[in-house]
Image (tube, rainbow, N blue to C red):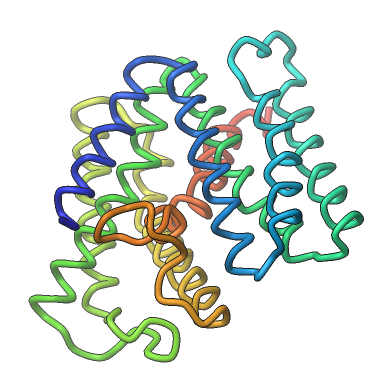
Length: 253
């Protein structure tokens, strides 16, 4: 069931990328709002606080829609709205953890939509997502087959150093293939091993959140996987850094 769910999720994300900006934005919005709900549950928020956080997040998500991409300042405006939504949630609920969730669930969406909108957006957005998938797959098989010392036993007892290295190798090989076959820029190819480590860090952070909340999974929406936060914890830190790698050459002009 776990393997089937993984294949389905990768297929859905890939199809949304291929179908264009609007399909990808719609999928990202739905996922982000579900993630916000799971984050609220991990923070023991009330039903009212959860709805408020989701409604607040929906405003910057709506501005990210492809139909609104008419001004060059759009991305900064959306980022400003995202920060404003977080401040609003913090002021109304007096819970900084919920405000952090608005950024946590909204920033990777903004980053991925930004990537998809570029001239080489299909390749770049696929790279950002697939390197996380490759890291997870490589870590899973290397950890199971090799085992060895635990990576962070207090946070995630099943993760090993062998799994981390396997994930880095798998993601790096994927990046090399994308570079050779499709022209992925060198800066992204060379940054992939570091992003693979970042993806594993995101996984450990989400494990810490669940341990603090006293739950095994962030939700139960995905058969064999738990919640969306459980599956997308690596994408959350990777997507913004991937977007920065796209922007970096323009900052020095």
